[in-house]
Length: 325
Image 1 (cartoon, rainbow, N blue to C red):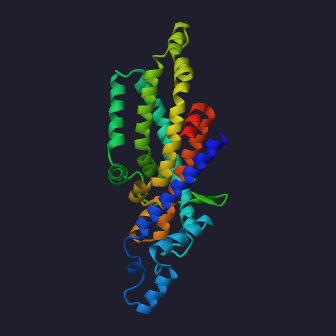
Image 2 (image 1 turned 180 degrees about the horizontal axis):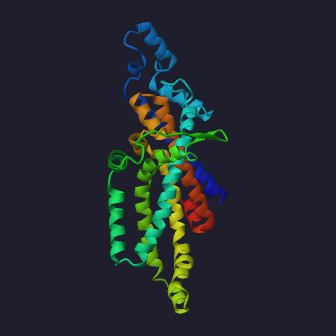
Image 3 (image 1 turned 120 degrees about the vertical axis):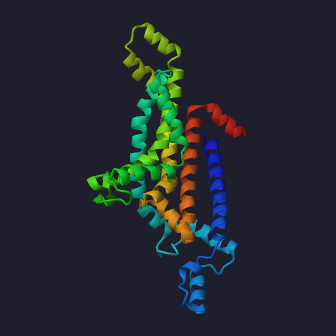
């Protein structure tokens, strides 16, 4: 097990190293942020001083080596626009993104599992077909289009909910949150719903497929033959056996939403990490873009490493195959 874990750690390190090279060269090799950072009336001396201060006068390969050396010491650079450490600026937006993602996943699980059970237990019923048809639309329609439709219906036509911003927030243990104020919750509903719709559709299809497969298994038939009540069969024998893949998908989707909820945050002007990334791309704020993508890469590599180690611990065949390869 130790050999397998060491192999996966080394592989993860090289994945992060390769990603850092590709991301750094792609971001730093495009455009010229000096044109956006320096006012038109600035002198050539002032421009040269800013270029030198930002380290942009160095060859690209030397800029990367400086970045890699600082990154190994926990420093991912300073924002060109805001003048603060990039990692601090990104983490300051994390609470807003987290509360949005948490509410979205709660909505997806709360509605996705019951609707998936309904669709899986009676797949030929009209209601089940309607639910499964809705999942196709929920999963395939573009996120930005759904966001604009939600704004059009609930904000413009009905006037029930606000269209943008985070609303009134309160401080809890040093963290600013909008989950505990009525105005904050009103601002949360539309962006959270926009994030939840595709995940709800995915959850419904996953649970429906699992339910259809589980209800044909021998242990379910045996429970029916023993006269167990249908409600108990569903909750105890079917639902418990299909929750493992559901939990896995919830974990993967949660990480994806934290890293890449950019479209929803942009449509609803939600002040989270995704909107910071889009704003930084427009401003050519290279340290923020590189730091954000590297943090997202680190998150996914860590999750995959953890999952591989758990699989190897549960199934020795995975460990032996990995060591042999």
